[in-house]
Amino acid sequence: DILMTQSPLSLPVTPGEPASISCRSSQSLLHSNGHYYLDWYLLKPGQSPQILIYSGSNRASGVPDRFSGSGSGTDFTLKISRVEAEDVGIYYCMQGLRTPPTFGPGTTVDIK
Amino acid sequence: VQLQQSGPGLVKPSQTLSLTCAISGDSVSTNTFSWNWLRQSPSRGLEWLGRTYYMSQWYNDYEVSVKSRITINPDTSQNQFSLHLNSVTLEDTAVYYCARWDHEAHLFDTWGQGTLVTVSS
Image (cartoon, rainbow over all chains, first blue to last red; front, side, top):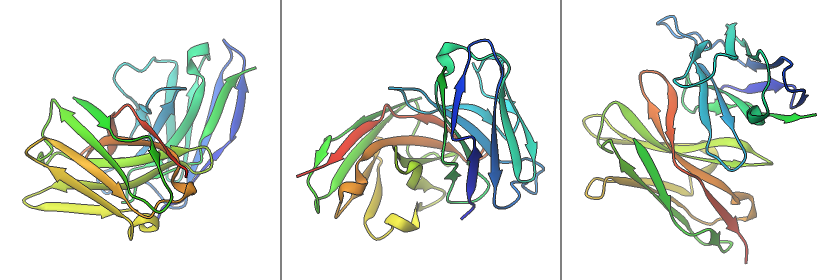
């Protein structure tokens, strides 16, 4: 299985300030079709997970443009340009290149 | 597309956890998506458990750690799929989700509402 790691595991944030989460995979997530199959999901309190970013850098439908994803190979980053109070929750990166899909341990984002 | 989960929230140790996910707006027999079960707990994070999908015939894949205890079945007459996890222990306490996987985009695009299942005597 592909092992996923994230840092930090806890991220206190100040509204209006930027935030960044790193994700690393144990092997390259590059598919032969040129896509990186790395997704970011957000689990808000009391809700189901929602897709934020897919294929490394593509924002899912309806996701605010303050969220952006980047990276290649085994190293990926999720950035929030200006954190809002509604962004609190657990952020997971996930590789979709190989079965089983595997998730990072999660980064808990809360307001300072 | 919507996924509606149902099933008990309390299961006794050694018994079987059973949940159902009803699909609206799509067909369980589609060959574009697969139908998955995942769970989330503070100690284990998000964990994929398994899937069922149809591509000329029915297939199943299961996470190795639960493979001996898990069954995921499609029900074409009711357009739904189910999860059965037997011999549960306290470690199986989690929020369980059903989710649709897009074969082309390689992502979970639709999730059920989640069911908190507590294993306790």
